[in-house]
Length: 423
Image (cartoon, rainbow, N blue to C red; front, side, top):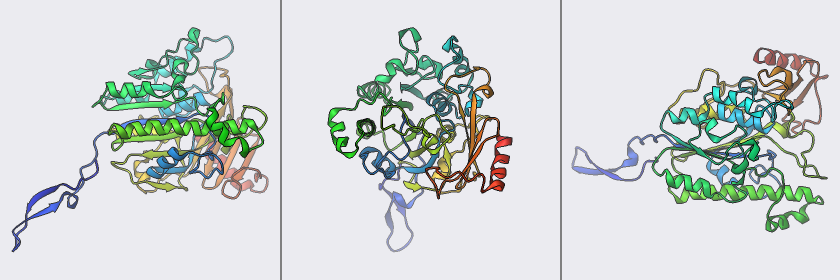
């Protein structure tokens, strides 16, 4: 906790005799193990927040969270599809490591067979349980019953015959309020907890409250875009309610709140589908996300617009905060020191894009479409066979409109040479 201004007696030799010194004159007591709340946005563009500069979308609660957090604006997910991205979040592993590379198994394959990969891996809830943490799953969860991931409680039953695929009853969270989360917190008062809060927001169907849609109808000619913008504000409201509950319960000070999006989204002006170069793509519109860390007891808020960070860093960071070490398979960074302003030591960021349907549930390679890497301002996208390459300068061309591969062959070779040993 932060050093309070209590006064303690201290003997000072001299004419003044005994004196009183403020506690702040002494070293602050380090915070104890934090509670963890992981907030996961679903299908949201990395620019689609007030604090990221969107001209129309209003996100006052997330703007406030950003102001209270160490906010990394150059955050990325390794793969731009929800199921593999979420599995990377809960394991700290690339899709080629955890092998949940797509949303659905091969046609005719029992989707429960994929759960063997969840069972074999040390997930965050399983690891945190070693320190006595209780955990609660709410929202998007593809991997069967919440207990498969090691959660001690949750909302998703995972029965495919009862509608289970990517969340079933868990998907009520957010769209129908947050009471199950509050009930869990109330029932486990005084215990260290991990909350997985992943509502299907602002994910389609884009059915925002009319009061919010009315705010955006006259800001665009596309009703579909207006609905998506309103969904982003509805998502913001739900985050605000959850964060407000932490404040009211006196939990905010020593709770590490982590914010990330599972994958990006660019709304199609003609329908509710995603536009090209967003979800399921290796472009910024698919893989980029702001990443926020708020822990008032330890971290001082600041905005970092330079450091490359990955959602793979979040598991090692959470484990470090809770007094645990990452497994040897985890390649992400502990961001606590980076959040304090120390250099990350990272040279290059990597990722991979796979087919929506998994061709082989035991091998990643058959479904691979692209690999990508970013070094500084430069980004290389490479097809699975290595025959097609695109190069972009993200600082000069953040929308990736000008492919520089032909003009910069040596830089292409340099970045391709980095991808080869990583793959």
